[in-house]
Length: 364
Image (cartoon, rainbow, N blue to C red; front, side):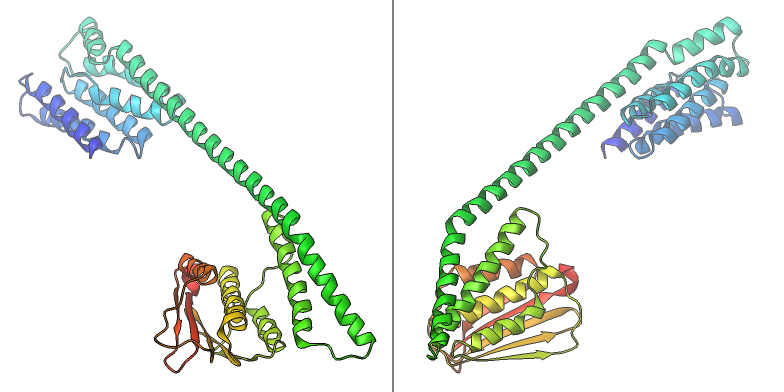
């Protein structure tokens, strides 16, 4: 809108100046009026095509001078400013020199002036000082914008560097605070299983579950630390690892089943990772809080989405209001970030259900 206002304003100023000269309505006069209007209105495209506008306004200025219009080349000065601001310095200087040379010849071609008057008219139409000022202003603004862009890039690089440093700090804290404790749990549970088997004693299912959970926690923590350090070489968990989750849940005494429906196709890594985390968190909550004996995991592959449902027959009732813990909040945040939907609530027939639907195309 601002470009069009400037263009219309310049065109109107050129027209008013041209009309004050009392030119005849001959073909040459009409051509001069057209060139005045075109030269002004062309400035509307100065931001998108500065070199083309520079050429058009220069030709229009030479043209209406040749038609006998003693009008200042205001539009060309605006075009010089825009071209210099866009960084086309060499082209701007070349076109400016060409227009400076052509204006006296155009004034002579009009047949209304002798040589001295033609040069005087050309000098009045395009003062060299104004031309230099327009170019210098455009160049100064271009350099200011470059400095602003460089400062913005510097701020972004600083923010990325600080984020990297914070990730490394978190990785070190996790390593120092958790790795040792999880390693102790893992070693102690494996030693207890080994001693029990060596003695020929039955190994409690709970002890086996602790051992497996320690192994998984150790692997998960190692993968998390590697991801924080940006050197992760192990592929993240996804849909292909959900059967392992269900199988491990069955070792704790829970009758867990997995059903996969629809034609399985490749899904984005973020979708697969989110579905894995939902199943993992759901089975963990069932084992800890639901007091359930059965759990079912159902995955439905659709053309544009993947639907997941995890049900249990625990103690939750339809009238009980679930208290959203960190796990449920984490599920909802992951699903919302991928543009999906999540429902976690007690079932009408008793127990709890977690339902998620993740779009495949949007997430990809």
